[in-house]
Amino acid sequence: MTIKKEKRYALLLAANDSDYVKKVYGGYFNVFVKAFANEGDKWELFRVIEGEFPEADELENYEGFVVSGSPHDAYGDEDWILQLCFLLQTLFAMQKNVLGICFGHQVLCRALGGKVAKSSSGWDIGVRKVTLTKDFYSYGFSDEFDEIPPTLSIIECHQDEVWEVPMGAKVVAHSEKTEVEMFTFGDHILGIQGHPEYSKDILDNLIDRLLSNNSIESGFAEEAKLQLLKAEPDRQYLENICRQFLKGGWSRL
Image (cartoon, rainbow, N blue to C red; front, side, top):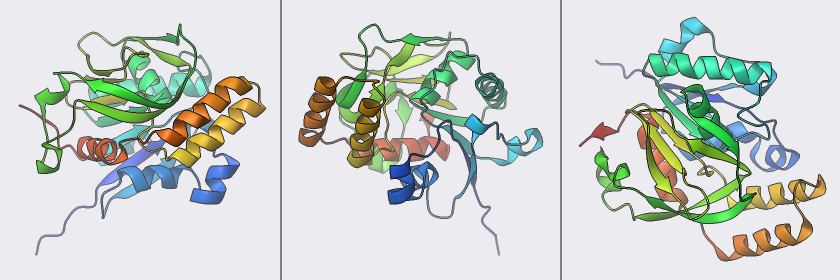
């Protein structure tokens, strides 16, 4: 009798849980697991924002890693951000599957030699359509991915962005506002600027928090909330893409 080996994944959480997410979902860890986990997976949480990292001798035992969003700048020099960059460089050298979301997308790019900075056009908050490039379709998927449309709607909440991808990386999605919405680097690195794991209520609460701490103006917040009511993100496609990538299901055609 063959015993199926349990697949382990690590969430590198770069943000503190908001009161809303703790109350409704039990924390961001549960949000990510619900969005990206397959049945039978084992997920572990490392609060990198608090200096909590996986042990070096344990890295080989993980199938994949996810780097979350964060209110911090990916180009910052806080100790934990620099330590995270070193970890990502190590995982890249080990050819581990690493998925970066928002801040995670940006810090992954930075760690591997790209350039990240403030967006010249300001905040992007709401549901935005991104266009997939031909390079995206150069990856093979299982049958459930046969008909991925050329544009996908995704929840966005960022004021920083990738300006240049690392040498050798490929931009696989862009939007009218952001040139690098998704990038890949070989078969083991995927960065996504938007939030495939977010539901609309999470963003709605985040808009309220950004307004309350004067990060955004009231008119901008009202417009973002109105747009959020009218638009729907393509969460099923986006979550499936992330799951497929993390379990090592991508292969060059």
